[in-house]
Image (cartoon, rainbow, N blue to C red):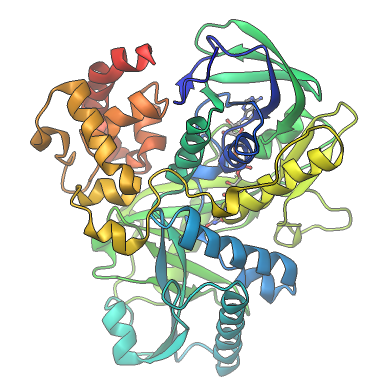
Length: 515
Ligand SMILES: Cc1cc2nc3c(=O)[nH]c(=O)nc-3n(C[C@H](O)[C@H](O)[C@H](O)COP(=O)(O)OP(=O)(O)OC[C@H]3O[C@@H](n4cnc5c(N)ncnc54)[C@H](O)[C@@H]3O)c2cc1C
């Protein structure tokens, strides 16, 4: 059967043989599917739940230049991050990644040695940017600010002790799950079969057995290579893979909790030399505060939970920098994700475990790709396919993804000139018109209704929810509110948006069934 060219829930009609089966549709699996299909291979990529069900939706939504790795002396990882950041911002996803100004306030409590160390790090980060050939138009050079300039960017900062600030730039995603959906949709547009609600129950290098979670039907698919991209669950599919997950927690605040904060604020964590809590304003008007690094043991939960101790810790750090610090009551949401860190012999602290990706082929023939981060997904996929080709398992064209724009990609100046609704352009780039045209066609409704936000605090629209069903494989309210949009990060907002999500499923349901 020819591929649907759209993402579809369930396994009805999947081929019984392909070149590559990809297990897991977080950023890693979506990236592998895109790399493989654009090298001319036939691909089936599946997720037990939904696109971006796992760690990929719980990130800080940053596209890092690798400064943290530089501080640890890991130059190669740092440079790889900087190169991939440049590719995302200038070639593959300029519609989904924006320059984010990041301000480190310098106050009386910050030792001069720490200020000098931080400034040196920012300079080194800028050298990485230059070596990755990312332009200053995309990411301006760091600079020192006086206290008036710093307060102009973040007026909620404590003014009495402020001496100035250090300003630097990094990449910020519109949304992490949206990147995953866009990569997966791009893979589908090139002909990959992309299926959700499809759990792999056993795998070898020659194929998989899968269960359609909608019908319970079992399918066997033969393949020349099977890639395990199941993140923190990788050990469940291949027991030779050993992970030591660590939990990272973020808080969600309304923008009004730290009014007029237009930049990310890096708040030094007291009694450390180079660790910061980040205050991250989001495109939807909320603010995230993150993040922690807690080793976890025991079974891997489907959805990890933030602990009260982590919430108190983050509020405590942020309180040191702002005049009226956010209170516990102003925390309208919290989310936690598990980093899929590979166990490295002789290391205890998870912050020291390898954060580079690894590609491992077990005795069963399954190839696991694990570790890394959202920023480096493209390189992880390239390395995985290159390894399979080098091992003689696949015969494929060279990697194309470094110069292959994702669906909707366009330069920021071009996007500014489009007349489509701003929210849709931010989330779909040049596909904003397609989103609106699809919603009009499927529902017959007027633009006023299709583009009305759920509420003042919740900018999601019926148009994008309908498109999520027709083109992005959304199957239920959770897919729509927790992954295609991120309304679900605030429980009260999710409740407010449920009727609109239900309406989208009703209006688009029959159209989705027809694909
Ligand atoms: C708190 C936190 C903050 C982070 N912040 C950043 C950041 O700002 N920038 C950055 O670049 N990186 C960041 N990272 C790292 C990044 O988020 C992860 O490295 C990345 O998302 C891992 O993606 P993945 O696809 O490997 O795993 P996942 O996203 O977990 O995907 C695995 C998928 O496999 C599926 N699956 C599992 N078992 C099966 C099965 N048997 N059959 C079918 N499917 C299955 C799951 O449903 C899941 O969807 C952060 C990580 C954490 C934890």
